[in-house]
Length: 309
Image (cartoon, rainbow, N blue to C red; front, side):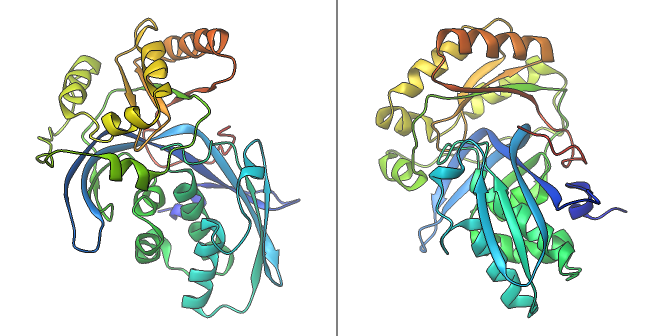
C-alpha cells in the first residue's frame, strides 16, 4: 500500500518534491454544541476540490519558508504561519537535526472558508515525515494535526469524510455520485472566530447520515435539509455573500448553492464538468473582480497530479 505522502506528492529528479494542498469544501455544516475549552462540536460532510495550493520541499540545513503565488504576499512567513508551525512541531517531536527548504505556492484566498492554511499544514506534515524518514504516516501524524487546528486532521486525511467532534473524528463519507464545484469568493476575508461569535440561537441536532446517495437529486435533497449553520451569521457580516449565492444559484444545472465553512467562499455543485465550466465562465464575465474556480470533487485522496491551481 502506498503511503499518504507518496499519493499526494510528485517526484521531480531535478528539483524539490511537490505536494498538493487542495481546497477543503464543507458541503454541509452543523454546530452541535460547545466544549468547555471553547471548541465547537461539529457534524459536517467534507470533500476536497481539484484546486489548491502547492508545497515544494527539498533538503536544507535549516528550516525556511518562501511564499509565492497570487496570495503569497498576503501571508506572514513568521512563526505564526501554519506551515512553519507544523514543521517545528514535527521537528521537535522526532528530534530531527536537519531542516528543509519549503516553498508555498499560494493559490487559495486567505481566510476564505476553504481550509487553505490547514491543508498547507497537512501537506507539510506529510512532506517532512517523508523527507526526514520519520515513518509516522497519516495515522501517526493525526495527533500533530489535531494540535495545529480543527481542520488539519481532515486535510491530512484528504478524502471525502464525515467530520465530527471538534474536527478530530473522521469517518468515511457516504457514497456519492461524481460531482464538480464552482468556488467563488467575492474578494473579502472572514475570520472563523468572528463568524462563530456572530452565531445566535440553539445548537443543531446530529445529521441523519445515509450509507450512500443514490444520485445527484438524492444528494441535493439531503444537503438542502442539512444546511450550514454558519451561513446566516456570515451573511450578516459580509452581505457580499448574498450576491455570490444569487449568482451561483442562477447558473444552469446548479444542484445547490451554499457557503463553505465559515465563508466567505461559496460553492455551486454540479453533476457534470461542462456545466461547472460554463457556470464559472458566466460568473467571471459578470463579476471579473471575484475569485472563481471550477474543479472536480476529488473522489479519493489527492493523486500524483499536483497542478491544482
